[in-house]
Length: 227
Image (cartoon, rainbow, N blue to C red; front, side, top):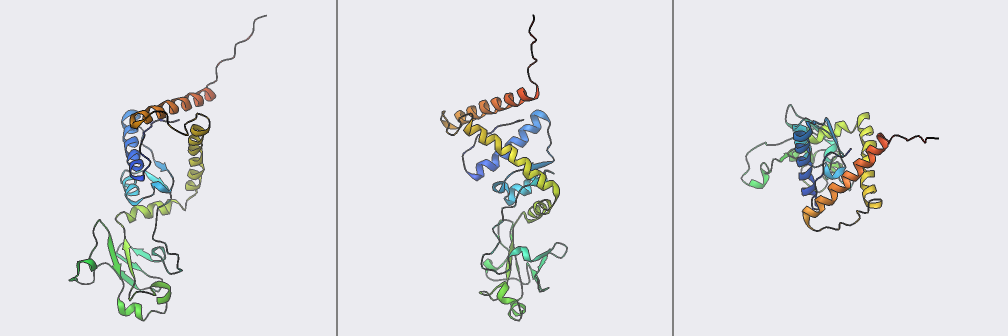
């Protein structure tokens, strides 16, 4: 059943904001506290994953990660994160630490926006037998750790579970509702203008879908013919 509707512009920031709005509204209206949230990769940004983890909502969502490399060299996923020592460990066993000394150049120090850069020693990388696989065009390897990387890792760990596979199948049922809206209810294009008009059309469409679902769950009683 559809329990809430929020019309937004077709941009990622607005859609992510509507998720928070609907979750808060459902909690206030119906006292619903979801244990998990299922969505596609567009909702797998670090800030949204961090918000859900803070709210104790398990993110069954593919992580939106652009740290992968297409040139065959090691990506960030190949490095092991050591939370206790606040450092990365490369496949060769060498450490990448955040701050080794004070830099006069601010661009070489800690980054802004909650991010942190971890670097290996130049001498270590120059003598490493796997340098061509790691940083062939740089003197030393560095890795940027995002602000909500812990929440990203929570989502990655969930993606390895059987429950995650079940959630992906359930997600397809939700996507079928969108297909039904476009093909059956004729909402390929909106007829009313503005955000308020779009919200009205979406509310009516969700109401129609819920009534259709209720009609299948609770069919009308059959009237017997009298002779």
